[in-house]
Length: 309
Ligand SMILES: NC(=O)c1ccc[n+]([C@@H]2O[C@H](COP(=O)([O-])OP(=O)(O)OC[C@H]3O[C@@H](n4cnc5c(N)ncnc54)[C@H](OP(=O)(O)O)[C@@H]3O)[C@@H](O)[C@H]2O)c1
Image (tube, protein in one colour):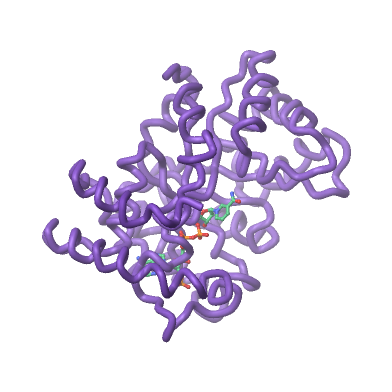
């Protein structure tokens, strides 16, 4: 694996914090299940636990997530790293939209540059090359320390890597869905190719949006869209959750969430779980500082085999 000097820091970060739920009312019920005060406590608790990598996006809460982070950053002296994302909406045509969007993100965050700027989705109508060229420009203007992509398949990731190589810019990361309930990247070649090219895999929805914490079941599904998304899985996931409980007990009382997150680190990726409050942030940070054994990873692999999709 050839990791460039410039992106090495990302490979050294084991774990991050996802901020989609910070300001998002539609999917995450911001304002009902968690307030700004809860979110601030999640931030403080994470920083205290040594988690200094935050993932957000211009679309999270229509900018609210970035604005909250901007406020929180003013309250700490700890150097926090921030990753955000550009959404290639179909009405955005010109390459300059990307740099303009990044400048708006930087205003909300109160930062001169971010540590990682990512293209959120490889949406049509433009080919990968269109927005990746714009990403190279953002890097050249010094508005971001590194550049990455998100939700890119193997072919799209390779093309992004090749475009950036023309500018001597490394592709730092590909942020993709990866958890014990979604193991597609192991099958479709993304994980292997990213490792070969030195691209950091950032695992999103690492708790399968809360399902892998064990608090939801068919009788007690998560609210709203999530309940529908996971209705069939909630029935099938119980044997896996039971195994996670047993492994957690063998490890002296680790929770299912901690097992799920540790498994992703054992796979060489960086999980970025969302946390709505201090309690969730504290539990998630408890997945740091230890490792599942090889046998435990193998048994989790076997129990989650049917979710490879
Ligand atoms: N690039 C992309 O396209 C993309 C897509 C999705 C997410 N992401 C990124 O990935 C981050 C994480 O993914 P995610 O937010 O979708 O899902 P997730 O991290 O799998 O789940 C987060 C949710 O699980 C529940 N939870 C978290 N920790 C818990 C704990 N210890 N105990 C009990 N419940 C807990 C909370 O919701 P409840 O309390 O309501 O259950 C929380 O909002 C996002 O914040 C975002 O930064 C990126």
